[in-house]
Structures are given as C-alpha cells and as structure tokens.
Length: 521
Image (cartoon, rainbow, N blue to C red):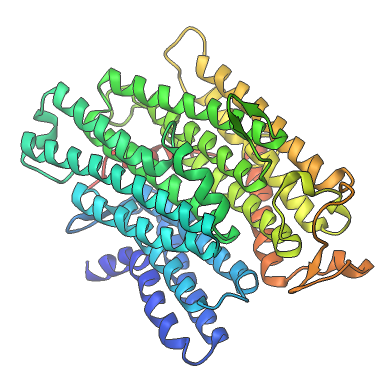
C-alpha cells in the first residue's frame, strides 16, 4: 500500500523535487542543471505512463492521500502536463540561452508543473484553491520573462483577474461548507444540499475557474496579452496546460456538485459555444487586422493563437455541458461527451504547443510577430512550415490528424438528446472559421513573398544576417527536436485512430471520463 501511494504521488512530487535538484545542480553549470531537471521529469513521466497503462487496462486502483485522490482521469491529464513540460524545457535550452535568470526560469517551470498536477489530483475545494493560486504566481512570473513593459503589464492584469477568480472559488467554498459542512467534493453530504444552493455553488465555480480557463468574457481581458507577451515556450505551457487544467477543474468541481441541474448544463453550453465562436472570430479579425468599433486588431500572430485558445477551451466547456444533459451519472451510463472532452484536451494541448513553439522559431530568427512584416518563410524554415501547418490542420480537425477525433466523437458517438445536433452545427461553423484564419495566417507567413521594407532579417544566433543558402538546414536542435516530436505524435495518433488500431474502448476512455466527476474509490 505504501508503495502504491509513493508511485501515485511521484508525478506530483518529482516536478517539485526537480526544482530543488535543478537549483543545486545550477552551481555546477547550466548543462548539469538542465539534464538533472529533464531526467527527473522524465522519470515522473515514465511512472505516470505506467499508471496510465494500468488505467487503460482497467487495473488501476485509485489512491487517496488526504485531500488528494489519484484516479484514472487525473493520471490521464497529468500525462499531458508532464509531456509538454519536458518538451518545453528541452526547447528552452536554446530559446532562452541568452536569459540572465535561467535557473529561476527552469525552477518556475518545475514548480508550475507540480502545481498543475496538484490541481488535477485535488478533490478538496480548499486545496484546489491553494494549488490554483500557486500556479497563478509561478505562471505570472514566467510571463514577465518576456522582459518588456507590455509583458509586465500583461502579468499584472493576469494576476489581478486571477485573484478575482480566486475570490469566487472561495465564495463557492464558503457556501458549500455552510450548506453541507464538508469541503471534500466526494462527500455524500453534498447530494443532500438543495438544488438551488448547489446551483449557486456551481455558478461561483464556473466564474472562478472560468477566469483562469479563459472562457468568454474573462479570457479576452488577460489571455491575449499574457500569451502574446510571454516567451513562446511559456505561451505553449499557458495554452497547452494552464487553461486546460483550469477547464478540467471546472468540469470536475461542477460535476461533483450540480451536474444534474439543467440550468448548469445550459450555462456551460452557452459559455462554451460563446467562447468557441467569439474566440475564433477574434482570431480571424486579428489575422486581417480588422477594425471593430473603436478597436483595431494588430495582426500579432501570437494573439491569433491566444484567441484560438479561447475558442478551443469553449469546445471543452461545451462538451462538459453536453454531458451534464444526461443522467444518471453512474455506469453503465454513457460518458461519451466527457471522453470527447479528454481527447480534445490532448488535441489542443499538442497542437497549440506545436503552434506556439513554431512561432517561437520565427521570433528566434526574426524577432517579429507582426503578420504584415512576415512572408516567404517556407524557403528558409521547412520544418517550422510543416509544423505550423500540421498544428493548424489538427485544430481544424482535418483527418487523418489527431484533431479530427473530436468532431468525429461529437458527430457519431455522443447521443445528443435533441432532434437536430445543433452542437455539431455550431462546431462545424467554428471549425470553418478556425480553418479560415489558420490557413490565411499560414499563407501570409510562409507562402506569400515578404513585403518590401519589412523589418529585420533572419538571424542566426544573436547576430542579424541575411541568411546564406544553408540557413534552411540550420535550426537549433533542441527547438527542432521538441517541435518534430509533437508533430509526429499528432500524426501517429491520428493515423492510429482513423485506422481503428486505437479506439476509445481500447483506451478505456469512457471509464476514465467517468472518474472526472467520481473519484472511483
């Protein structure tokens, strides 16, 4: 039993340990620090992978340690967190090589990873709040590594609105404890609380976690600023990990409290659909520099990706709302909507990290993210060109890439209790807008000739030089390795799913999805 507890806690403990070990090894040198952190996180990833295999085989036994419960869905999501954290650190070895405070940077990534996994494992609302606030502090400091006034301003706005969201979560905790006398979301006493009180708790949780997840309208306040101004590897973590784990925590907490209340289902669907459409439209306006009212979109490619994140999180929240339309919430009821939500967590995590890291390569060479100043990069950056296109098409849910699985599940696997699958129609509209802005951005950045008088030239290392013919073969190995690895994962998973070699049943995904709202103890 002790061994089971230790193994279950390793994915949480090892990132925190990596922060300490990395600091100690930094006195030896940068390489020693980097290797120690990568090795420790890789051990955590391997252990988590073993636990995930057991979960897929139906052999995993959830482990309860105080307020933490390590169950199948927690292991499933923490796998994504560890995977992306390792690749971001590898990518950062070259991208952040000129940074003065590199040790602090890597320590903060390790702490951020640990807090994210703690948030995933928490079923106690107070512990959830603590981990969320810890992740806010670490991620805000990481945003400041952008080293500009705009980065500092973005971090301050992010901190302010996150603190506001935290107050709503504390409000939910106060109402929950006052009404039921319990803090643990798995306590049966919650079911005895009146529907009206549980609805109030859920609305507070929706707002609190919705701020951090970046759904409409909260995401428009902080998310484009923070994601645009942070270093590109941190943008990848913010988009691929932070907002997704917050959305996961939102669905878990609301699911444990009030998934059976129809108004909560409607609210989740409304916020989800609203985020989908508004995020994708804003990304389209950003690509073309549109003027809407008195606001002018400024053609910033990182802001395009940030607006896209709002849209993709909308899919996750909508799928949670669709699941809450069903009942009762015990097996053998279908949990197809939550299963599709988990698949989309992975698709968005992989694809958005790939896109931000690809844009990071462009910024590493050109130091430009204005779409109007870019063009013709396919000749010099073939790997980056391919990776951007693959990430874009996967979020556009084009087969045979991994992303198509989300729309496939929505179209064929989820028993929508309506005469017409209006959710599928709205999703197809969103996908159409998504493809429009991604393909447009791809053409502007990689295909069309670069505008005359554009600022900057491609630079190798720190010196700006006109690229020699061989520059198209020169891209820093750590950065390229991380990008290519994610690209291959997206392609391979897509092919495995479309050929039937991998299915939701093989992954035991419906049961894993059930454990989002039930610990499975």
